[in-house]
Length: 431
Image (cartoon, rainbow, N blue to C red; front, side, top):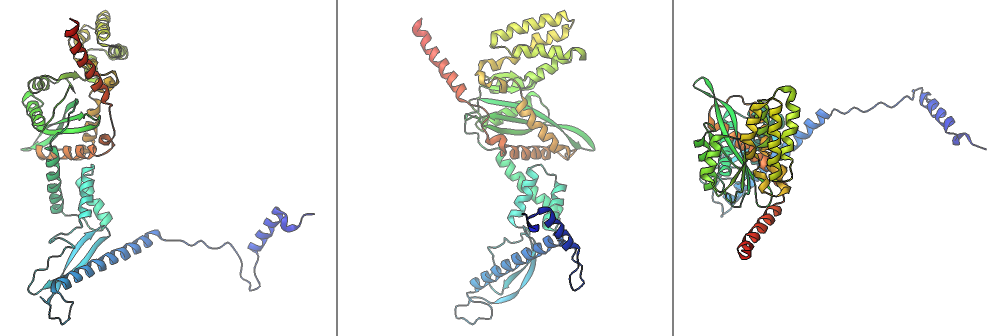
């Protein structure tokens, strides 16, 4: 036998009936009303409480500092007293909790130097650091102004932005000229073209960038410098700048085929090999190939660099040239004949590194991020501004996973070099 209370269906019906019924007082028992919470009102109230607490704490600390300097509290009679109060003056300070009002004590004889806040400082150091980090992370100055107003209730002034930029530029200039203490066996080079306004006209300005892989296998931004043009003089100055800062042990430079760059490399780093970016080489060949045949030609070119060794790659290049001639693509065949050998330098290095040495893609990806950041600026007022913004972005990228995660296992390179040295020592003995 089943009781009514044990029947779930019947119990549910009874509950519904009780919910809709009235009690003895005649008050209808309906569904309870939901309590609505105004999250915005609560947040505003909490912000006021936190801001008020910070304000009280800072003012109490200022009063305690004044008492310590006077060696007596306010209105206290003491033979040890060294000074008396002369009122106070009001000042504002922007903190992470918002803008607070401070009552800074004044003394009659002694200067009141507080350790709580620096003289004339209008913002807590953490607020300024946050603004600087936003700028370095790629946020435009106008956006920084909007964000600070939303977070701390006040909008930064143009003079504050100028002061912030000055501090940032000092840090960037120090970072840009830092010593390069360790070896960098592989170095990637490229230039970025930006726009600047000069005398009412818009001109191009070039920023030269170098990144490398150090002896531990980590990627580093090695240098960034302004170059009026990507010519021999600009590249030579940039490479000498890197060498003076300590760039050494470079076995291979990877870049596009820029004649000025190649000539400068031969002058400044004559013992290093040069690898022409395979992707840029393909694009050069495609300029002489009809759109309908590009996919087939691309597969042919990839087969060259998919070879198992240098000799096989050279043989495959000869076959590709012959096939291009059969396809009536004589100009494309000529480009392959002249440029293929320039793309084979990576074969002299460990197999495990080939994929990462064939192209300039690691630096190209950084350049795309820089262009995304500089696009919001449009035209720069001068080359220095362009250089500083690019350097700021590079400095930020270098501190992310890009620069803190191992990129290559360099033991493959050093093991290969040790084997080559051993063979070189054994060769005279066998003769």
